[in-house]
Image 1 (cartoon, rainbow, N blue to C red):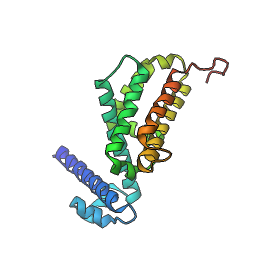
Image 2: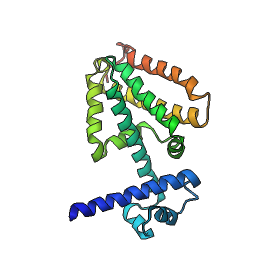
Image 3: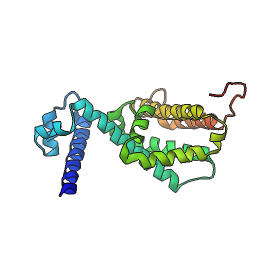
Length: 207
């Protein structure tokens, strides 16, 4: 009985998130009311407040959901097409994310520039996504790159790659600035390869 009740709660929450995603994409956040979200999800307005404090909190959960979904799909794809070269696996991972956003511009327009390292890290730290987090960490620690850098440097490298990917996706796909994503991608991948294959300056103090 308790498990069935929890499943119903989760279903209602998913319905509210999906309703918000549709309405936010169509009308924008500011022009969408909580009543409209509840009606779209086929629940009472009061039910909304059982799950979310306001639209901002719902939007944060929606961005997390989208980010988590993309990360899971990208990781699964990369594992299925895994190469011996770690750097090329990272390129495959990033390429999947870019391809996804190119085909789902409504999701990219919705989350805007929020596909950032802090959002990705928050998503990975969610209890239901711990397995993906551990798998990604294991892959990173087992890579040849991990022998060249300290943990802090590795963290900074991942930060830069994710920030680059999120920023390039939004500006190039949505705004087409400074160029289209097809023209930007080769440059982005060259930068990622240089970051991952670069030998650190041994004169720098270890972190």
